[in-house]
Image (cartoon, rainbow, N blue to C red):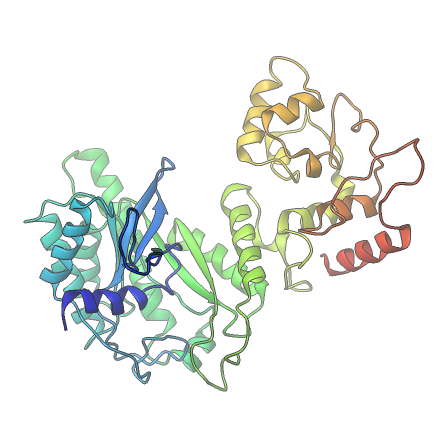
Length: 436
């Protein structure tokens, strides 16, 4: 099998890992001629700390796997074409893509060929070639395989910019049913090793500028959503725990795509729970940037996300007793909880109001999404002029993607084209009934 055939198989096998989400486009020309032609060669994208988009070669070292995870297309029992790169082949391929300016880095994972330690050794040999004889200093994201020896993880962390260990499923019970070769212990063990390595590296770099960096871009993980019966609340609590205990940079969520017929898994014709995945990302954002706790977003009595409202709006409409707040006096921490105000606009408000009191036009220039924020704010002690404020109007204006999501303003010029009060109450009641 030549390198191009291996590349085709192993980039396709890597597409289910969502730590990098976009892929290369297919050739749009029937003849392959012309400018701008592209190939399905596993080019994906990530974003650096300063906001730059970085193109990566996203590929598996091999899709040969001794594990038999029922949700995985590369499982041992699945009949699929198998391939494996040698370290030299993959290093040469990476450098070839880099020299042609196709990529700026590498996203490398692997099936568990022979054993976790053997598979990790093959990844390490590839990265040693890139970092050594090939003098490649670009970004590398490498997967740490559950059950790998800590000494190998330590070596991998010196070679890669970011490491990740996929937790895959939200509970030990689900792992035992669907991934019998994996356990909570052999997943969390490498996470702890990476966390400790990052901490020690930072402490060493403070004392010695020449100390080796260890996973300088941190670690992340991926969790499959919808393959098992865990609730949104359980997943969110687990996510919060991972951030606190293992200092993860990011938890990625992947809506389960049925790839196998199994009584323990959703049917093959089941659609991926994309809205649920989207809500989890929104809630994850609240945990990381808005100082929310998981117990504020969901709780034991309300364990599923509101399908009509995003988690921040859902929290706000269930705490209307805390609103409206005066934008010129309220603390920064409260500003973050107002729908339509994010960290950037909250910081701008905090700076701008030192020079004088802000009005509605000032908020619009600052970047506040007034369509949402206007229901929760006062400017100079007053609501926005001409706005009809009721709980029903507030809920209706916040409903995601609804055709009713326009603010209703008072008018002196006859009947509006807005829905009837009965229709409004029906939508608002259904939405509020699903809220916490």
